[in-house]
Image (cartoon, rainbow, N blue to C red):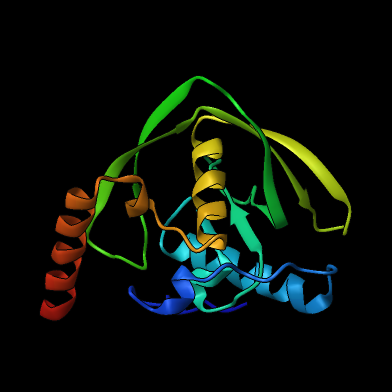
Length: 167
């Protein structure tokens, strides 16, 4: 397993819709393993393949207290979202140094291809739901800042640019 580097914003791969995964192969499993290791090294609650330069609809999420409970997903899609919303501070290693409070549905039902290559429907609540939605956004070429007003988004991206230039 390898910790992979993050694609820096504004790389166009972060704004492209990722390609569907036709089947779970050994290569897909290896990518998932690298993604889990990369996510744990951040540390973070989830990671989507485009964040590390792979344009495939692959994501991992682990919001457990102990870690080691990562859910590996291919082609995840939200089937149902709760009406009740939840606010949470979100960030991305692709835009280091910034974060924002984002409001998303508190619970979602997601369909995905699991590690066994089977279609699975699973309910996610709270932080798990937030992270899954955040990763699906990445797979669709969206970032958390896209949920903000144009002015707030511009301010945060300018702050990230300034931080990147200092580094």
